[in-house]
Amino acid sequence: MLIGVLRETAPEETRVALTPETGKKLVGMGYKVRMESGAGLAAMFVDSAYSEAGVEICSSAAAAVAEAEIILKVVAPSSEEVALMKKGALVLAIFAPHLNEFLQLYADAGLRCLAMELIPRTTRAQSSDILSSQANVAGYKAVLMAANAYQRMMPMLMTAAGTIKPARVLILGVGVAGLQAIATARRLGAVVEASDLRPVAREQVESLGGKWLDVPMSDEEKSKALGTGGYAWQPSPQYIATQAEIVDKAVAAADIVITTALIPGRRAPVLVKAATVAKMKPGSVIVDMAVSAGGNVEGAKAGENVTTDNGVLIIGEANIPARVATETSSLYSRNLLNFLQLFHDSESATLKLDTEDDLVKPTLIVDGGQVHYSKPA
Image (cartoon, rainbow, N blue to C red; front, side, top):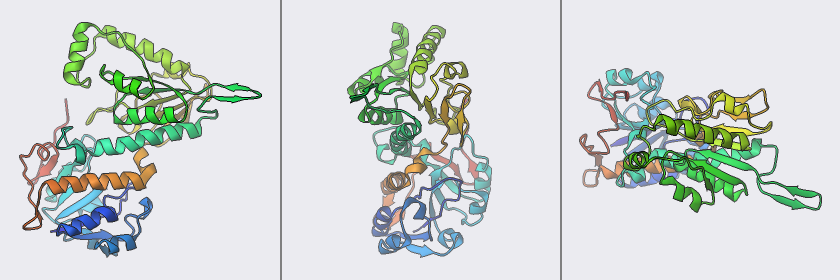
């Protein structure tokens, strides 16, 4: 089977779906791999490295994918890219299907589309979980971005001229990105607080040296939160009011705030109101990691840095993983490789995709000329 790889054309996208390492492994599995020239350059992977791995370098996008049966991408194909692909091609990418306006176009073109971000969070799927791999790096980078923009020190510093207090960092949302952000901020010497809807996250926060912002829960709420893993339960009005009060005080006292709350397939929840931002000290920094999904912070703008009237900088970087493209590309391409290996038939050196498999069924959003994805209620 032939695998094709394109250079990403989406604005500010520097990642690539294949590295020389994963290319070599796919060639070793019996696949023929073609790649558009320069596709890996923004992520610091040169054409010669791919050639040495057995990947055929093509001078154009059309030459790379026109005959490909499997196509690997980071961002979902544009209409121009769809026109280059053969009917029946299987496309693996980040499709953002709840926002993607081309789903019917993919269906009309006869493509089979696997939205890799929809892979379920199961033990078997763990090695193919692109959300976790990208969020891990993004959580690290978000802290460095905040530290770079913050005009004061992160750690405590004792000098003959006096003592400089450590920065107070608040992390809202303690998933993969949030935990990495906590660990990174602590390594830089900051005092870190964190909050999450999941009470089980407390132990993780404290194990990394962070302070848990505790919101009192009734026994019924604790049971709901523990039973759903914390993501699906509906808090009571009293809990929401108490949480808002506690978060308001913590944000107002923080020097740096990093928000990470995302709900796959839905708009990000607003965690920080503009009125709360207005209480922060001049020079404080907020990094809204959910800005591309609507944002956790009122006033945040995707792709822009906003400075409020009271001197708070809100960083709206919409694609933080692309800021660390070498590492995120390596992890992303391994995720794709791990997924393909699950359905690889070594005898025929082909991919045999089981559409009823619990990893495939929720991710196969377009197949057989039809769109199978429906937006969550």
